[in-house]
Length: 302
Image 1 (cartoon, rainbow, N blue to C red):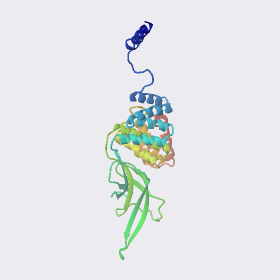
Image 2 (tube, rainbow, N blue to C red):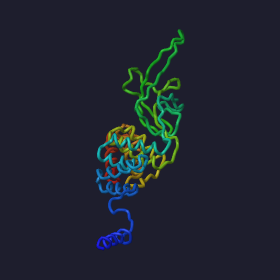
Image 3 (tube, rainbow, N blue to C red):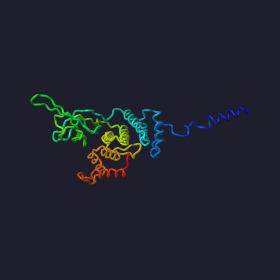
Image 4 (cartoon, rainbow, N blue to C red):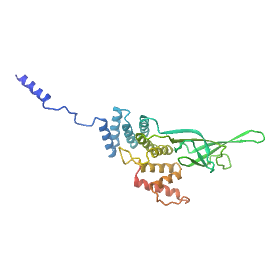
């Protein structure tokens, strides 16, 4: 009888008095882990954030938001190579890349100016190398022999459509000469070929921050410009403090560090149109860098 009563009580406890519920404790869903990750990130606890986002991609490797959160966390932990890997995976998951690299394209000189050249594809995002090589071929009018001269130009600035260059001190050719129509100019650059995938924008923004932190300013410029072209009013959904003004400020500092001072000035004026400056002043570069730092103090960095 005692055994029977005990069995009945056990049945009542198991079968009647208790509902089947999910266990109370840490989130086990992807959404919960993402939420925990960004909460930790917002609190500056990047190691916890990294662990949460890593759990997301362990559950589902092609979870783009997890890869992006993991990348941003690793930036703050100075794990730059790993962060690059996460952002690259995120870009690939979301389909075709909206940017494209052109290597050693033959370029034409703009007819109405001596120092401007025009690549074929637009808009230009940036250049992986500040040096442009040119081959000039002179034909002897008497013998018909060809004389080839290698010329080197340094990039001064660029727009969506053109690249402005100057004579490089690396030239062995003694006479300063601008590019001519007969020259064969070899230009490497990146351009935006279209696409509006916001998750790829998030990944490009993270990659720009990594490149900037590593001092790879020309690469930072390319990826930051991708963000600007794809999403001119960009705000990061998961952490709104990452937004377009900070991208422009990263561009300003990256341009300055890459000695593309006119581009840096354009970014500063975009952020503070009323700034007064003297481009011809001997202290202009000092004033420009100081203004960029002042903007960092107000806006903050990525």
